[in-house]
Image (tube, rainbow, N blue to C red; front, side):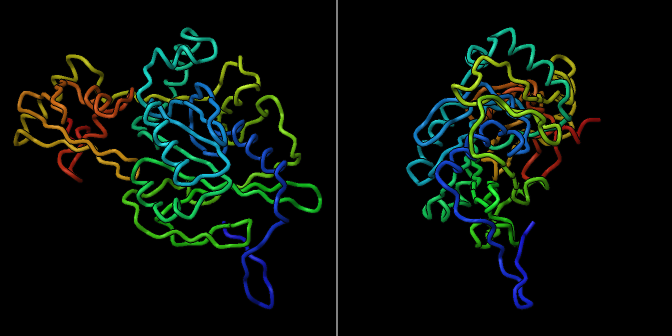
Length: 345
């Protein structure tokens, strides 16, 4: 939603309040960390927070079971971006046992919570960005390469904070993207316009800034009550109730055909209807996903690294180093071709 002042019968971008103090910005950053799933409007199972230069980094599992990183920092320049991408790459390689060891309550709690939330997953959920960055200041050199950054599976959000005369603190969290031609609310009085260029459209719930109003600039020690829109609340960074078991919903995708003999049989039947060897493609450019595989006449899927699988979901998870991806949905026969799920008899 864009907000304007009507002055002399003309619309001018609205400027709300005055520049926030350092204390207000710090309080806003702390609130974003505590309510990260509400801000991102994305289900995450928070594993744990770590301090990084200029902020904090959350390790989590997303709706598809992919290991992701969310960083909330003050200044994002090219150096900070490269460091964040390096951390996210290392975090993505974290195994399930390592995640469980970091989870409040350790292995038993992790497996129980994962199983509880996994059942509520809508069929066909796809992995989100591997790295999400929220910053109060984004350098020009980062903005100029926004399209390339987005194609690498990185999502950027700009956090703006303003103060009003009556003591309120206004917080705007805006998703920076390259495929929007409209205008968005800018609390600094400027209009944010992004160039077109993304191959994959963003979901409807990410097309506008997310306004949040915080009444007090003082950070609180524990998670806030009453998450909005049934969104789960992530844990606070270190020092804020660090032993609390997280109630953040994590959703894992159930495969269209369960792995085992039924899956092998179904895949072999599909292979018999195609001209083999056939090229299978899993392509999501905005998410940084681009995998190719070969489907043989006997229903064997061979990835680019030479490993072979008889189950599409197992092959997809191996290619992306994730868990619980529905390979029947993500693998397509050729670019833009039908998915394996669509080819099921």
